[in-house]
Amino acid sequence: MCGIVGAVAQRNIVPALLEGLQRLEYRGYDSCGLAVIRDHGLERARSTQRVAELAQQVQLEQLSGRLGISHTRWATHGAPATHNAHPHFSGNPPRIAVVHNGIIENYEQLREELSAEGYVFESQTDTEAVAHLVDSLYQGDLFEALQQACRRLVGAYALAVMSSDEPDRLAGARYGSPLVIGVGQNENFLASDALAIAGTTDQIIYLEDGDLVDLSTDTVLIVDRDGNDIDRIVHTVQAHMAAADLGPYRHYMQKEIFEQPRAVSDTLQDIDEIVPELFGAGAAEVFEEIDQVLILACGTSFYAGLTAKYWIESLAKIPTAVEIASEYRYRDSVPNPRTLVVTISQSGETADTLAALKHAKSLGMPHTLTICNVATSAMVRECELSFITRAGVEIGVASTKAFTTQLAALFLLAMALAKSKARLSSDRERELLRKLRHLPKAIAAVLALEPQVMDWADRFARKENALFLGRGMHYPVALEGALKLKEISYIHAEGYPAGELKHGPLALVTEAMPVVTIAPKDELLEKLKSNIQEVHARGGELYVFADADTNIRPENNIHVIRMPEHYGMLSPILHTITLQLLSYHTAVARGTDVDKPRNLAKSVTVE
Ligand code: G6P
Image 1 (cartoon, rainbow, N blue to C red):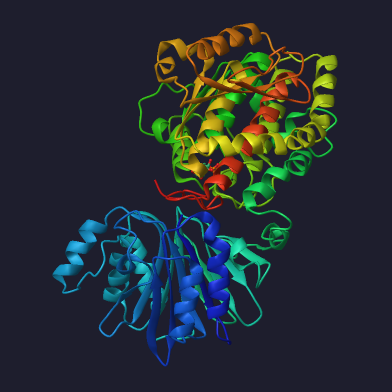
Image 2 (cartoon, rainbow, N blue to C red; image 1 turned 135 degrees about the vertical axis):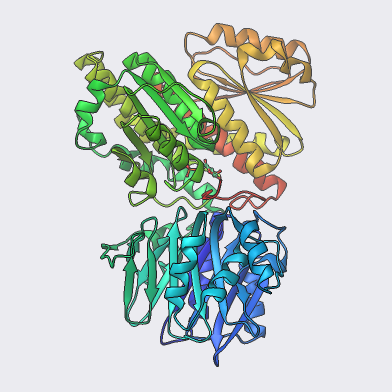
């Protein structure tokens, strides 16, 4: 998704802007650009290539300056072409420059009005309308013009704006899309996230929706949505540097897969008793009051929610619905005020999940809880209760450690709900906590299967389609396995509950269709074995991840990797990891850009 870095300093800020863009690459983008003010004039470089190419261009054109804005663009309005890349300029000669993340919903109306005023549009973007709007309102005070412009904007935006007439001033605004201020020594920054400026400062202010900022090298002025001057807390943010280091790994995705024992262990901390307060003050009353759970999420986080449904209904016996956020927000549904609305989000900034949450609240469901990896995110701020997963920064677009830590947190939630409804005996609580505590070791044992999975990946890399089968609580794992494979290897993959095979997908089974099967040793094992035979009998090639003691043996066209141990209710967490490894090594064998798959973004902050 689009990324913003802006800076006002007493030194040449081009290297800091380029480093910031590089740090934002993980969010996904298809073009990039940078503008500076030099000798009272605006200069820019833009590229549809990677940030590294932009850096070369910047060097060739010798761009430098003490005030600048830069951007990675993920196309929404207008193709990924140089003329659509940000920064956008307005004025003749140019005097206003704008970078933007979000979507301006009334841009067509603004475009018409501004065209009538004589502005000529050079791009198909919604952002250019903002540049012209600010220019049309500009009377020598950039902040004032931006304030007035924001009153006219409908939609979501994070903006960084500068004017060639004011070479010591950087202005910004946030509504619906993330924006932070980085406070430095005689220099200040605007960025989409703290990671972007981690190389320069660890002093971060998280802006709230409606905030506008006016920055110079040594002043930070913030005004809230009502126009009042406001102080926001300066946070000291750590650990970002380490996250950006690849260490011995080839890709961030591989690094993040191998970080899972640590990430899960950090998320579980040293919990030795399940108490509602794990989810925030007041959770005990909320858990007692609710009689239904509604989970809202997108992408991989949605599959974490689907898994949680099995756990919550089994342990706590509370009816649980799981909905894709972008669907829920637009359909007629029947609200129940005694619902616990749970959002799951790695980033805490996903536009559809945030909108679905607000929609649920507007329908009269006040009890909200989020499972989120970013403590300072909009999602955490919007929810009554929260549990922060401690995956650490996840850079690979395809989610891995964020997913397994979400699962660990959701299992805790299922236990907490069960306990508050008096459905969890203390023996069972102790037993499940023991299992949870052992989980990091169990994950490490699964990671040791990597060489065996790599052997399969070479064969997989030559396929164009794949089916993933699971049953019960491993059905969402099959869905997640298929999603992972298609995201990073571009192999078409579908996840199915194995019992549905004969109602459709069996028609697809030929020797060209690998069928990945998750075979835990649970009460559905015998039924799953029948499903395996259905595929085998039709000449299909099976790749089975089988728990110990399942008696599924390799034979012609049935390949088996044996999982170290059966892990009961927590088994989905272990089975997910082998599927992550399979996708990762298949993508590597196909030579794709694993960490930055085409067309995808890490954090989708637009609808
Ligand atoms: C994007 C990412 C996915 C992620 C989804 C939801 O599509 O590429 O990896 O699962 O957004 O993101 P969230 O931050 O809300 O978990």
